[in-house]
Image (tube, rainbow, N blue to C red; front, side, top):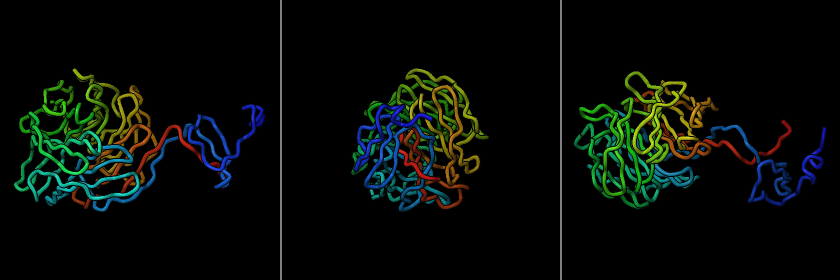
Amino acid sequence: MAGYKTVKGFNIQTRSSDPSNLIEGEVWYNSTSNDLKAYGNVAGSWSSSTAMPAGHGLGAQIGTTTAAIVIAGNFPPDTYTNTTIEWDGSSWTAGGTITRSPPGGTSGQIGFGTLTTATIAGGHQAAPLVSFTTLVEEYDGTSWTAVNTMTDARNDGCAAGTNAAGLVMCGTSPGGTGTESEEYDGTSWTAGGAMNTGRPRPMGSECGTQTAGLAIGGYNPPSENAVEEYNGVGWTSVTNIPTASNNGGCAGIQTQALSFAGDNPGTTATFSYDGTNWTAEAALATGRGYVNGLGTGTSAFLCGGGYPFETPSNVMVEEWTSGLSTVTFTDS
């Protein structure tokens, strides 16, 4: 068998630290940690991370795997919250309080944007209890401010995009079919294209962009496996996800997405999407529904949720990593 030098033309390099500008296929020996390492394409997996200070179910989750917020949420009997907690990639801190109906709170709201430019819309509202709202708020990294309301009241939907180019779709609305979508330009709301299959509780909360959105699963009932893509004008039905589910998490874009967890009941299933086909991936450690997810198709984040719905919400956090990554060789 040919050796490394024969194949590559040079010996494995010894380095005191891992290189910063890695190239796929590169191999090196880290003399500080005494590890032989390589950079290449590895199968995806979930790993546990720092637990939340308090569980949130049916809340909104916005941002990235290193800069995110989890907003409000509830579990029966009507224990709504109006709190925000922030994630920096390793720890949680308290954020601003949402402005609607204090001291009640909300759940089932839809969120999109970033940690410092976030938008939440709709939801169930407490104190006094309102089943569907049109309320919209924006977050600047410190505090929440009420802004222009949506046209249609809704809850339990999903979203995509940024707070300057957002999209909300699916959900439950009074007298509605769940096929309505709306677009947000940072100030005003306008009607978007009608979906082919109306449903609340899709896999949420952020997947795609305003002109390239993705809606996965839902609850009609029973659970849906329908998937639709948005092009900024209309919706197109595409390949169904293999397992019907609802109230799970998703992350990524139309051509590289990840769908995980969900009430099926409390599934651990994970599927990746390449824009055409779905592939089964490594399972979550803990199955649960009533969650939201965020991130990309190769670096995703899941927290909160629970199953069944009447149980206290989960504080467990799991992170997904796939694609190009640094691996350490072992003798096992």
